[in-house]
Image 1 (spheres, rainbow, N blue to C red):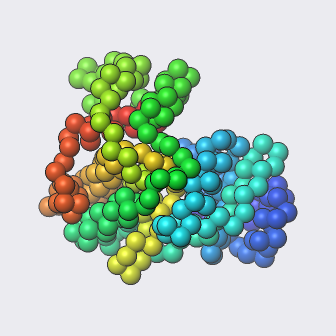
Image 2: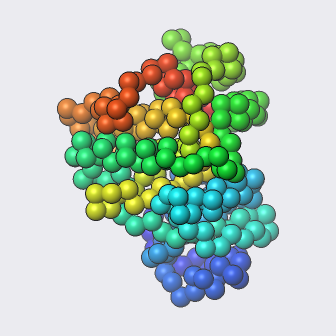
Length: 271
């Protein structure tokens, strides 16, 4: 990510958003697998991507969450020439994968567990979006049928001799093995880069594209895997000795449901 003043991007931005960001410098981040371009200002974030219904749904959920959870405030949402422009407030603090927290895993896990409990405390009776098992499987099937699943990005043992022969094989197994449903408010991508801390507290949740009413174990599973890979050297290359991701269950005060954990990690392989 580097500081930029890209006139092509600036000229494409809808006028309402130009007015709200006028005179501010920004950094541009178009790194990664997402089709989005992200402009980072001092106190604002502008996400530019091709129009899609999922962004509309995310904006609806984020507006609904205002006052319920620390999430970015929607400052403007515009569509123009096939693109959507989402201007949000910038969450303060640092990602939970910051080196300080990786070096202090007990503090890290305690805060991540606190964040999960905050999500579960949200009253879901009027939540505008359902992200339950059936919705997830329906989207997974669409991705499989359109050949969108990246097998090369899956865990090493998901596909191949010891795993599933193909995404279609995995999908069939998931449709047959549906677990019981424990609905809560789910972040949908509860991984370390999406949870922010400041002054020993949760300062915010970002990247809420899959948020809505979902199974409790979806977020637990993704958090467990994210912890494991951030601390075993899979991400970043540094191994943090003496840490066990099972600490998460201790902090949550629950027994691990390994079958559900495996189910939701396998389901995520299709996304």
